[in-house]
Image (cartoon, rainbow, N blue to C red):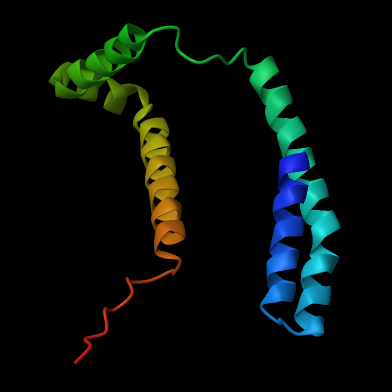
Amino acid sequence: MDLLQAVLATCLEVCKKQLVGPVVLTRVAAYREPVVYNLSVARELAKQVYIAENLAPPRSFSTVTEVYKNAFARARDPSFWREIMANGSWAKIGIYALEAYTIFKIGEMIGRRKLVGYFKLEEHH
């Protein structure tokens, strides 16, 4: 949390140096406390989920490669697809795919800093 507070303090200093109006500076400063509080609550919630679900990073790279090999082998197997269609777990896999796609699109929007499209390059003559 100290890092976040340092970043916010630096942002406020930059705003002051860039001669940002006092109204904007006051509004940014007003959001500082709620943002810090909400981020600390999210951090504590993530810790509790991490502990409750016994989450841990993979112990070796071979574990990661084994999981992906298994997933790709099952995806190529037609009997796997028949089985998930018969028992209804296709919906769960669809939800996982939708979540992955949504996370990808949110990351793309953050990277572009826009909701739709990319910036147009201006031609300089």
